[in-house]
Image: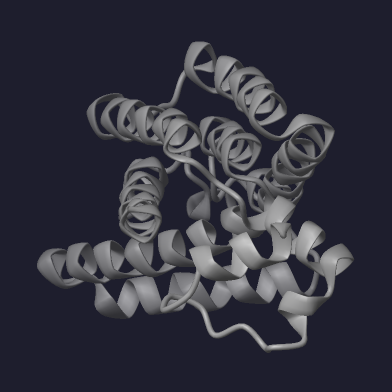
Length: 210
């Protein structure tokens, strides 16, 4: 019955193999990892809007926003889905922190961005966080390209990107002139890009639910 309800819910939105709907253990696993309700969507939406606004205004995302975001994300998912929800929330937070940690150590991203992504992972779970991060990277790249072209710094930025990639691949930190501490660099507030990605994702999820 649970598999049937799950398949009916996503009919017309996701192409599910017929054999999948006849396998209750697999359906339970998929449903727990993908299930998301309107109530759960409200929290990351509010978090994203607040973080995006503060990052736009002050170029920082404060702890009073990110730390409660992690705790509330775990609490809401636990309340909605029990222990599987808590596990997914903890995994999402850990995944977000782990993925951005190398860039924080290289001082490409700030600690506020790092904690913000961890909070998003706690709210959305690991599977949905990966989708949001891909969207955030695309939005961030588009915003950066527009800023670079407007400031006529295409050649300089291309050289900086090569240096950052080289340092990342060879496990060496980039020069201090390529960190977020350099006020001369063209910097895009990642919190804004991530906030836009979250809103796009939540809009798509809300449309699917309704």
